[in-house]
Picture 1 (cartoon, one colour):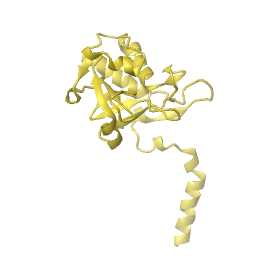
Picture 2 (cartoon, rainbow, N blue to C red; picture 1 turned 30 degrees about the vertical axis):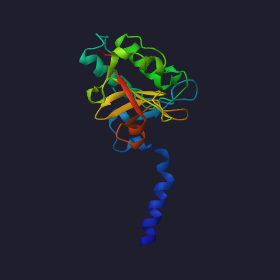
Picture 3 (tube, one colour; picture 1 turned 90 degrees about the horizontal axis):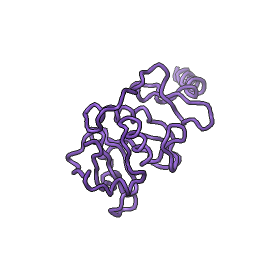
Picture 4 (cartoon, rainbow, N blue to C red; picture 1 turned 90 degrees about the vertical axis):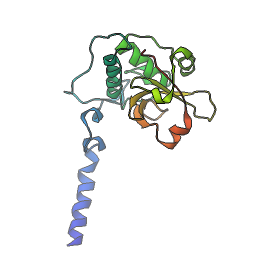
Length: 190
């Protein structure tokens, strides 16, 4: 009897599992992706048929603009990391992701590099003041000099383009690595 169960489980793994994506199991709609043909297109795109969130831009500090920036960032989860990238076609690097989000949703221009974003001292906020849509900065080498940025989305989570070979994803500020690497935050929506 056990050998029948083992044979059935092996058959399932060998025949069915290779054709299904992990995101198809118990994932919310905004986390489901379909692969695109090879070429300059993004590694993953949004599932066809899900509504797009492209409304007219409002004042950058408005709560609805912050929500739309965060919603658009969720739609970009799964796009590939590309150094210097700031479009859906090319992919994104960490600062390029924020530049794209603020430019396309809020019609607001941000500095292009992580260090120049961090240099905007008038936008500085404390960690306990973080709101969805704020920028969070990290140092990968242990110094106080920021080398990475992400978009805070609430509940101690942020969306970012981590590094080459990875895709845009959600990470938590509570993860030990990001706790150690956290440097500062900026609010560009006020």
